[in-house]
Image (cartoon, rainbow, N blue to C red; front, side, top):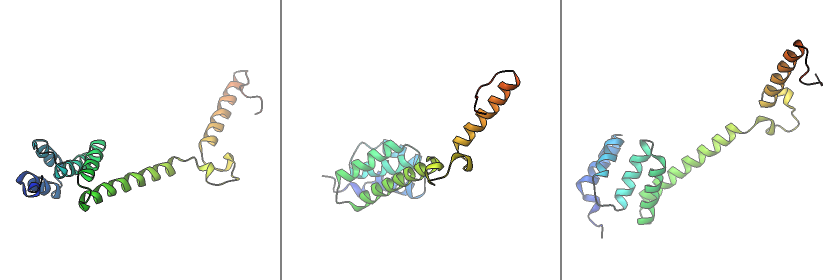
Length: 140
């Protein structure tokens, strides 16, 4: 059904714009093409991803892959995106994980983590309260 789609001038021009890293121009050009085939979804997905429309780009790459499951270019682009996203998720989880769980046996007093920060804040608040005649925490 789409045998001549790869030689269509609009898709070739969009590929050239993508190669030149003119992703917004490619995206706008592709939006004006009414033929929505695997090539359209693939190129629009690449353009969308590179201008920051990640969810839309992922959806389009996935659709291109499913429309033409034997197209290795589409499959590789989708897999490359998934690997990048999974690696980002892994890195952000490692970054955000609380450090006290990384080294068993380490109490909060010898690590620079949120527990020490909270403890110092509590101590300062207790000291101020005691200066005013009260006692916020009786254990200090």
